[in-house]
Image 1 (cartoon, rainbow, N blue to C red):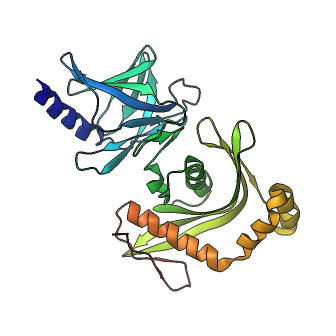
Image 2: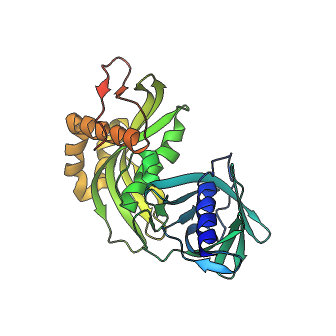
Length: 303
């Protein structure tokens, strides 16, 4: 029976990672299910076993979510989906539709007869392929972020999912985040001062052609509860630039101006982020290019 359970658990994992995004999940911002959940146990026909790898479910307030884990070859897998509420729990929409029923403080889902029990992740819990707050390590690949700092990851995500959507749709949206200072002294949030860019690209052979984008310096407010950006104080344009920059950056103003005026460093950071985006996602692009400029060769993936 133990061998049969192992085989079923493996098949369940394969199907679980077949989840794919399918439309919008709707507004579930008031749901008690929002947050990070981890698989605590898996069972079949009364026989239970702990999963061999970490598996993490993240439910966002906009009806989107991710499921992450590590396959039998040690490769991290991250699947995106949409979700909505049911009478006794929630359901996900994708190539494989899963239903989660509330069981006390836990969520339970079944696939191929295998029951997967999800418990809330402890605050600050983290591990390889695991989570901390509302950020699942590995999610950063979608934004060109290869690190494991959930505060930094929140800034990358915000630039793509909130700021980047103010531009015309493109195939890829990649931010360049230049963090100047992080202030952890507020009780409920982290203040992230930086020079933030986002550029949108379309594919043209082996080149990412930039079609839109912009610069948004300022201070992001990142919640300590779930590592999401709750507010963004942006520096004003035109004649109000200097005054608003001094007001927002305060003691960090001189450092901000050094970063803001260093176009070479900005170009290098952009090259690194676009290269990370391409390499983390296994894409075949070798260059990015702004209209009217020569292509910029990307860094190859580290061996």
